[in-house]
Image (cartoon, rainbow, N blue to C red; front, side, top):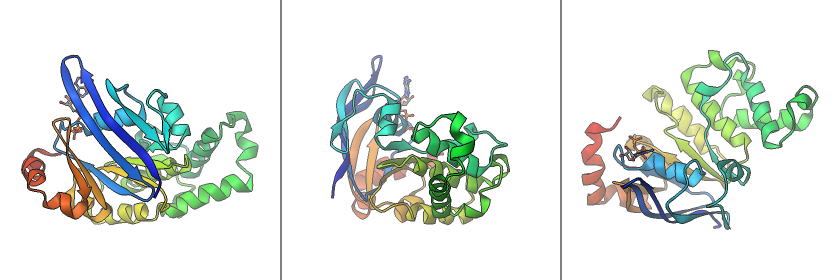
Length: 251
Ligand SMILES: Nc1ncnc2c1ncn2[C@@H]1O[C@H](COP(=O)(O)OP(=O)(O)OP(=O)(O)O)[C@@H](O)[C@H]1O
């Protein structure tokens, strides 16, 4: 399988504080990987480094075989490294469909002026309908974003990311805040994502991790504690001690 994301020796210092230390990992097409670790382990910083929000102090990031370490976050997005959007930042009065159309148009760099005419083209409508259908949001297409149930908002975040045509998709606690009874709906939608995508999910909930992930990367104190197949990592005494042992403090 093609390696889509390769991170080598990634480190980040904030002044004298080393927040990420020599982290290496890779994702292949089709991987479903959970990124876990106790609070403050450096998960968010790691994702910010990978996506280009923060420049690393050292290390390299390759996306689908190309070195993107020095590329801007926007350039990485254009090359298919996509992190899910936050619906909270969207326009509450615009419908789900309108947001999706805008995302596709932005991806294709078409101008807003063309929006009215282009929106009517079959290709755009089909693509939007397909993404919404995959996420189980077809029936909510004409609903204003502000009226969506919280679980639907979280699904829309993934649909918008999908509209960017990701090769590597990073999801940040996609079921956080969703009642436990509804989290399966989100996992089912994630399960329907294209199989050749690599998905990296930051997740605190070990029940969700075990249902989603085929592999796990564990960070602790900014370092890679271990990584590997889900069953092996969950059985690793170091993980149980360092991660599960501090679950009482997790949010
Ligand atoms: N800009 C910054 N300047 C200084 N220290 C920072 C900065 N950003 C993060 N840190 C520190 O880096 C460490 C890792 O933070 P990070 O948010 O990456 O962890 P995390 O694993 O995502 O935690 P959580 O699960 O609580 O979100 C923390 O100790 C944090 O205080």
